[in-house]
Image (cartoon, rainbow, N blue to C red; front, side, top):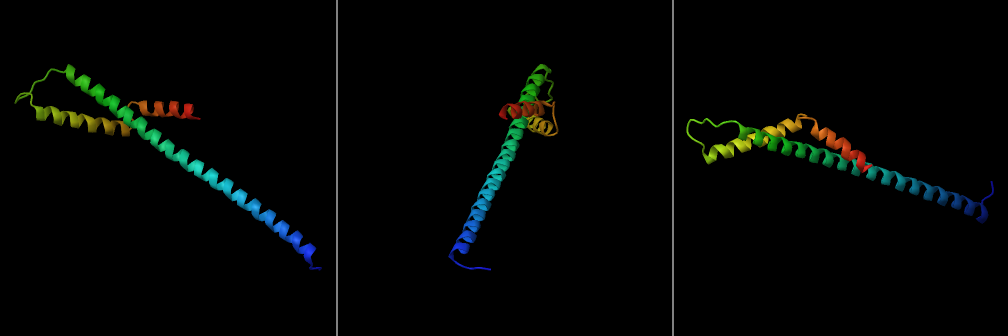
Amino acid sequence: MQIDAISSSVAMSEYNNAKSKSSTDFAQHLEEATKTAKEKQDDKKLKSACKDFEAMFLNLMYTKMRETVPKNTLFGDSNEEQILQSMLDTELTKKMADAGGMGLADMLYRQLSLSKK
C-alpha cells in the first residue's frame, strides 16, 4: 500500500464528500422533522379552534332556545339566576363540543384542513 501526498488527498477528498453528503442528509431530515412537527401543531390548533367554534354555536343555540321557553320561577327572575344559567349553558356546550357535539367541529376541521393543503 502506497502512502503519499496523492493518495492521502484522494482519501481526504472522499472523506470531505462523504461528510458534506451526510451533513446535507441530516439537514434535510431535520427540515422534514421540523415541518412535520409544525404541521401537527397547526392541526392541533385548528382542531381546537373548530371545537371552540362548535361550542360557541351550541351556546348561541341554547340561549335562543331557552328564550322560547316560558319562565316560571318561584322567587322571580334575578340577575344572579341569569348569570348562573348562562355559565351553566357555556360549560354544558363546551362539554358537548368536546364529546363530539353535532359533528360541526369535525366537518369544519375536514373542510379547513383540505383547503390548507
